Each structure stands twice: as C-alpha cells, then as structure tokens.
Length: 312
Image 1 (tube, helix red, strand yellow):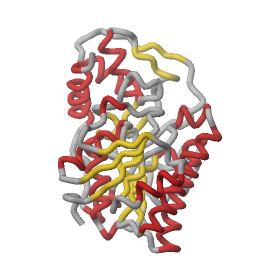
Image 2: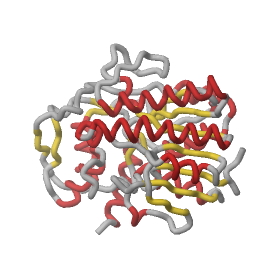
Image 3: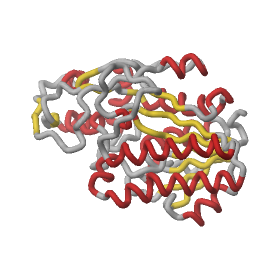
C-alpha cells in the first residue's frame, strides 16, 4: 500500500502534528480530508490542497459520512493534557468517545488501515528506563487515561473484528507549526517564543525533569511507515529518540541559538508536571519496520528556530 492516489482522513489535521502529517501526505500524492474542530488547531496553517471539514469526532454522523469517502485514517484528534485536566468530561467525550466513533465507522466501511496517535504519558513514572511498549502503563492524568483507553479500543477492534489498526506512542514532539499562540502548546514552542522576544524562559519546577524530545518530521515518517506495513497490524510502537534530556539543558540550547544571555525563571510545578523522567526504547519499531529517528535535538532545534524566525 502506497499513499499516491489514496483518499485519507486525518482527524486533528489542523493541529501541530496533524498539519505536518497532512503536508507530507499531499507531497506523496494523497487526497486528504481533514476533520478538526479548531479547539487548538490553526486554520491559517491548513493547506488549500486538502479538503477541510470543521467539526468534531464526537459527531458520529459526520464521522460516518467522512469515513465513507476514504481508505485510510490517521486519528490524531484529541483534547490535550492541559485541556483534559480542565475539562474532564470533554476529555472523555473526545478522546474516548470520538475514538470509538472513528472505529465504528471504519469497521462499517471496511477501512484499509487506521493509525492511532497516542502518547508516552500513558507510562507515568516508571521504575526502569528506557520505557518499552510492553511495560505496564501507569496513567497519572486524565489525558493519559483516555489515550490509553483509545489504544485499547484500537487493539480490541483488531482482535475482535479484524480491523487493521496500529498505535504510535509519541514522546514530546516539537518542530514547525507548533504554534506559540496556542496556550496549550509544548515547552519547546514556549521557550522559542520567549527567547525570540528576549524574555526569561519559564521553567516549572527545578528543570531537572527529563523528556525524550522528538522532531516532528521523524514522528511523521514513523507514523506513515507504520501505516504501510502489514507487520504493524494490531501492534503498539514507541516513536521517540531514546535520548533523555532535562529541561534546563533544553533551555540552554534554545537561548544559545539566539546568542542571548537569557535567564530562566523557575515557577511552581503544575498538576500535570508529575512525570520526573522519561526516555523511550525504540528498538521494537526499528526491528519491525527499520525506522529510526534521523534528526538530532540540536539539528531539530535549529530547524525549528528557522520556522519561528519567519513568524510575525
């Protein structure tokens, strides 16, 4: 299965990762449909080559109508971790109910493949690192609970109905189209916004907590590769770099790109900042489909800076 000429639905396609995924699919010659309610997505980033439908995955009738038009689905639509903590009911309705709507419609249509975008947050605080796909999940936020539920629904639909599903667990994706205007954007975008303006970089807690930062181009390539392989059906894959970086180091790297002596300002830890360390093992996806990350953190930050510098 290749993507040229394929009709593809990307839910959450106006979001950060979704925008990058859509652009990649269009370059490969796909006919792309985007479903997004623009809660955090940016309409100005939408490609005119894609067909955009403003709506929610919670609308089962709309979902069913769109799924009838396509052959492949990339399901990225979700309430993110900050929105989920503020609006638990919406988290449940979108992240769990919306995923079920997608799966039911896909089963009815007989979709070729669904790739569900999950999150490394489902692991919680691990006893051992790096994190493997088979490690017991320990969700510590409403968001991670609902993303894990979505994973389980995907695997159950594969086992029970033979629906071709795969799951990718992203770890701290960053890069172009991660809009700093969005108050719920990730730490990399927030740091770039501050550094560009000459403001102190705000760090929640002591900055010694670690993450596995993954450049968005790598994440998109992994997601597409998973969709193309029969080996990945009914399976879950980490998408990360396998490299652990603390937030203080990240801040220094970004301020260094601007040649400014910018200070970091330490502020209170948030409720969602309850994961001390995170780094993922990507051996499973390497073995199964020969995917490895190609963009180092330094190169990814340089590319991200070029994109930020173009923003007004």
